[in-house]
Amino acid sequence: MTDWESVIGLEVHAQLATSSKIFSGASTAYGSEPNTQACTVDLGFPGVLPVLNAEVVKMAIKFGVAIGAKICSHSVFERKNYFYPDLPKGYQISQFELPIVGTGSLEITAEEGAKKTIGITRAHLEEDAGKSLHDEFVDQTGIDLNRAGTPLLEIVSEPDMRSAKEAVAYARKIHSLVRYLEICDGNMQEGSFRCDANVSVRPVGQKELGTRTELKNINSFRFLERAINHEIQRQIDLIEGGGKVVLETRLYDSSKDETRSMRSKEEANDYRYFPDPDLLPVAVDEADIEAIRASLPELPDEKRRRYLDTLKLSEYNAELLSSNRDTAVYFEQALSRAPELKDQIVNWILGDLSAALNRNEVEIQDSPVTPQMLADLLQRIADNTISGKIAKEVFEAMWRGEGSTDRIIEARGLKQITDSSEIEGLIDDVIAANPTQVEQFRAGKEKVLGFFVGQIMKQSKGKANPGQVNSMLRDKLK
Ligand code: ADP
Ligand code: MG
Image 1 (cartoon, rainbow, N blue to C red):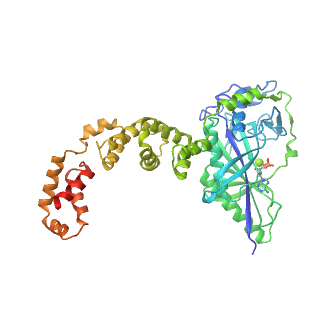
Image 2 (cartoon, rainbow, N blue to C red; image 1 turned 180 degrees about the horizontal axis):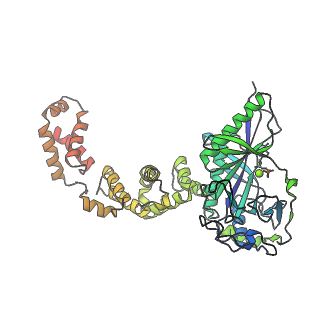
Image 3 (cartoon, helix red, strand yellow; image 1 turned 180 degrees about the vertical axis):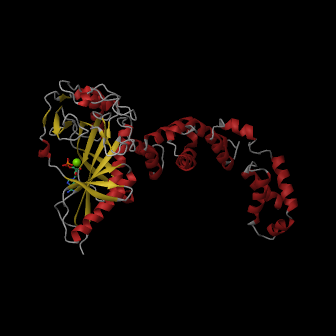
């Protein structure tokens, strides 16, 4: 029996978040009527000329700087020639020999929390093609060219990943980074963030890489992991059965959880790449790069470090709160309102808030309970206006839009009872009603204390201050 090692390299296509296309002024907005956002340049009319959108160059540089890559002072757009109905020009404008972003790297958290550095070979700019619509028509295919000319940054990794989990960790890290940089909205359902996975296997100890296949059509991190694992197993079974892996592009079908052959893979020279004579080389100087470097926001790794070192969060919480930019923004806004309640804020964001967001399929930036509202709620626990338990009720009410913490506490009469004579009254009533349990306690059965606390809290509808109840109850029972 041979032990196999899997090798994975990813190509990520991040749609750059510009409002117009890479070489034309047409809109890039998602979801419009087919062919309403394609101008003559996108349609490949003869005689029209592409004009490079300066914003996409800035965005590519932002990414390059963030991964510590060399930014090429001179990069070139080339024509990648092929025929397909969704590509009216007969070629895609891409970068080939001289991409704008050279080699860089990214640190991921691999399995069991270990850090691992993944090499990034390059990142280049290119235009997207249109879309073939197969389901809308009977025996016909529709072509929607709205997407044609949408700017993409293709980020190519080294074959450095050794498991599907590592590949997903890498893809998530890129996803987090492009969203931090605000260069891509990261929406996988709408195709703004797409991953192709290159997968091969080799016997453990072998140096040379095995023959790879390329998996396309993967639109979620969950499917990415499944598709890769599935493909690894398929290749192992194939080789152990005496077969050979062939270099090909395979399509992942999530409904059947299988990959199937789409086409044999083209070699680069099949595309007859050559520099596009309609476009000048892109010149970038040091000053441009430095200006962009200076404008970068705090990135996920730095944020995580700061959460660990300055805020003293645990490794786990720091990772969770920093990996999604919107979560970090939420956390920091709540924290600025109530810095002294840091631990409670962390617990509520990762606990009750996350649960509510998941349950209702709402993104944190759209949460009906804003960071300010959450901070106010936690302040009311801290100042003993309400108990932690009642706070959950107030949270739910805020989620449903019933107003601020104070308004809900007022309207529902949830204010905690801290008046000791009132609490004493409640205790006396419960003691009087349960003589048997009083005897048990006096006979040394400490456990019945819990029973009394429960009864008193019930009588007060959860509003009695639990700390006061506990200490006063003990005195009374003695
Ligand atoms: P192409 O443009 O044909 O897809 P590239 O040379 O750009 O080819 O490589 C694409 C990806 O394939 C890169 O991410 C690279 O790391 C990965 N890759 C190359 N060889 C292998 C291999 N044997 N096993 C797994 N991944 C590989
Ligand atoms: Mg490829």
